[in-house]
Structure formats: C-alpha cells, structure tokens
Image (cartoon, rainbow, N blue to C red):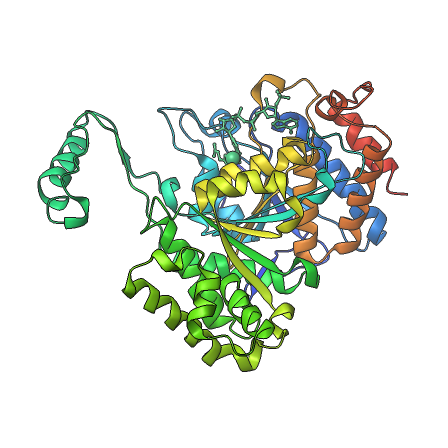
Length: 473
Ligand SMILES: NC(=O)C1=CN([C@@H]2O[C@H](COP(=O)(O)OP(=O)(O)OC[C@H]3O[C@@H](n4cnc5c(N)ncnc54)[C@H](OP(=O)(O)O)[C@@H]3O)[C@@H](O)[C@H]2O)C=CC1
Ligand SMILES: O=C(O)CCC(=O)C(=O)O
Ligand SMILES: [Mg+2]
C-alpha cells in the first residue's frame, strides 16, 4: 500500500462519524516535520505532546506517530519534484487526523503551495485560528489580554484556488481580449472599463456553498462559548467586491437567519428590536431612520426598502426575540476588512469569532497573533467533515532554521487543538498550563525574550519544550 513509508506496528485508526472523530486509546497520527524550522519545532512538539499524554493517562492512552513526508524532505526521499507524494496523501486519508510543520512556497513562480494543496485535496474547508493571550507574554500592544478571538477562515477557495494567468501568456492575453471585447461591454454596470493589456489575471471565486459551510461551523462554535462571547462577525471587503466579498456577508446572514433562526440575532435586528423596546409607539419609519443615519437623504425606493426591513423583522421575530430575548442569542454582525484590522487593536474585547474568506483570514490571523505575542503563539487547525490537519499560522521562518532557537509554541498549541479535537482534554490542559507557567516565569524563546522588560536570556527551542513539561505540575 505504501511505497517508502511503514505505519507503526501498534495503534489504530481514528475514524469519523457524522463529522466527529472516533478516537481509539492508541491512535496512529501521521505527522509532517516541515521545511525550515520544522526541524527544530517538530521534535519539541512531539516531546511535549507525548509527555502530556503519558502524564494525563498513565499509559492508558498513547499516540503512535507515523512520519510522512512533504516538501523538501519528500524530494530527498522520493525524488525530484515529489513534493507531496502519494504515500503521504494515502496516510492522511487513512488515519484521518494529522499534524504538520510549515512547508515552503516560492514567490512569483515554481510550485504552488503544498499547504493549500493539502487543504483542498482533503476538503478541509474550515481553518480555525484562535488568538488568546497567555499571562506574562510580552506584547507590543498595551492590553493584549483583551484579545480573545477565534478566526474561522474559509480554507478552500478565494484566490487560493490559484487560477491565474501570467502577464503576456497566450491564454492570459486571450482572456483579457475576451473580457474587454465581449464580457465587459455586455455588462452595462461596467461601463467603458477595460483591463490593461499588460495585466496578469487572477480569478477570485467565492461560492455560496463554501461561504455557508464555513459560517455554519463558526455559529456552531459560538453556541459552545460563554454567553458574553457568543458573537460571530462576518469579515469582508464587500463595499469594493460586491459579488464575492459582499456576497459572503449576505450568504452568512442568510444562513444565520435561516438555519439558526432561533439561536441568532443580527446586529441590525437587535437595533430594530431595541428601538421598539425603548418606545413601543415608534413608527416603522422612525425606527428605520434610527437604524440608518443617512435615511433622510436616501431615494424613496431605498427608504421603502428599509421600512420594509423594519416591518418584516418585527413581524417575524418580535415574538421570539423581542422584549430583550435577543440579548440571549448569538449576535451576528459584519465588519469591513480594513476596519477590523484596526478594531482588533482599538476594541479587542468587542470581538469573539471572526468568520472570514481565505485571504482576509490569512492576513488577519498573522495580525491577531502579533497582538498576543507574535507568530510563535499562533496555533491553527484545518478541519473538514472526515479529516483534520493541525498546523501553525506561521511559515518556515528559514533564517532561524536548524539553530534550535525558534519558538515551538504555535505548533505545540496546534497539538493542543488536536488533543481537544480528539477529546483528550486532560492532556491538552496540561500543555496549556505548562506553556502558560513557563511564560509567566519568563522561560521563553528569543522572540518573547527580546520583548520582555527587562530583556531575559532566551531559552533554546528544545529548552522551552523541557520548561513546558517541567511546569505540567
Ligand atoms: N502553513 C504553512 O506552512 C505556511 C507556510 N509559509 C511559507 O513559509 C515560508 C516563509 O514565509 P515568511 O513570509 O518568512 O513567514 P514566516 O511565518 O515563516 O516567518 C516570518 C517571521 O515571523 C516570525 N516567526 C515565524 N515563525 C515563528 C516562530 N515559530 N517563533 C517566533 N517567530 C516566528 C519570525 O520573525 P523574526 O525573524 O522577526 O523573529 C520570522 O522571520 C514561505 O515559503 C511561505 O510561503 C508561510 C505561512 C504559512
Ligand atoms: O502556503 C503558504 O505558503 C502560505 C499559507 C499561509 O500563509 C497561511 O495559510 O497562513
Ligand atoms: Mg499566512
């Protein structure tokens, strides 16, 4: 079945039932060490996870690691250009849950991302990236403890589908000609616009199915959070890209108010209900004026549309959500992408789950990780209906590779997410305690050490792993 790898002789497969993992006591878990600093981070991660499982379950549970290959080390073993061998894909498919270090993607040419390929091959449509603060972590931000968000990033489409044509290529030129001469003139709203003849062209597909299955998962997660964190913010640049980013927002609201009607309230609905609660005699038009500050300068059609929105809201959900009941529901709101980048800094405690498209989520997860200590503190998970691959937010950080200095925190915390996904909460809690206490005692790698005041002597990557284990208690 496998060409160059052999599964462990002990252990059993994780299977999936209705999208949930069914985990044996001794699961076989494939791992990819990763390029660049993977060589430093992976051994540290494996050591910490094994120690936590051993301590939590006293031998009753154990992970059998199965080394599989991707990236540069796959080419070393399988031959030139064998970046993602079939063996690796077969193993991940067979064992269902895997964890990986970062993989290199060249800029401007060469292979397309292996990380993205894995997400697409296994339809891991949800990328979950929590950003929370561990006490004592130095941060350039004044109040990093106020940020506690989970980014739910659509993981399979958007520009990451990678459908683009190089400037000057034969098909690229044909496409531009077709757009300029046929499709744009046939679309009145585009007027006389023309694409420059020397442009590269990329396609940005955002589907209703992809958007809604992502938002569905985000809302289901919100339902499990404490009441004060039950909020899902749809992040988009829908003012500029109306039929992709704007549609993501609309499909998100549509899903929330159809599939989760009783559990959710949208921000605009909450204003309409709140206005009526404060003044039972408020007319529909007065209410409409209060939810839309520019109401008086709108066209009659637009005004009528907003009045209708108020009427429909009150008719359909006053009974179930009115008289303050909406305050117990999951709040679904939306924010424009550029605005959310400043809001997570200026009003971090106003956000909880941020549901995004692929590119926005990629940017936002690095930015949010920076607030809570940097890319060494940014874990992640790629989750589908029958497979999950855990990986950090950061990349290969090549300038630090092989120096035993990089922060393994993000991959270790990705391992924590994996343990939680498996239902091994006791082991996950031990790692979180160990990591938190190591940081609180200023036992940190270079990235955090340089931010501390006064600066502390950094631990090596491997020493940080040992410090985490010592702090299990
Ligand atoms: N999922 C994946 O596998 C990903 C892969 N990549 C790929 O990785 C390669 C390198 O990308 P690049 O843009 O340099 O981004 P990286 O995330 O690899 O690194 C950028 C910088 O972030 C800091 N950093 C990253 N990881 C850590 C860590 N564990 N601990 C502490 N600091 C960290 C370092 O900053 P400093 O030097 O200032 O300390 C580093 O130089 C590219 O080929 C890219 O495509 C990128 C993102 C995700
Ligand atoms: O695959 C890559 O090289 C980059 C991906 C990335 O930045 C991410 O998923 O956060
Ligand atoms: Mg990224």
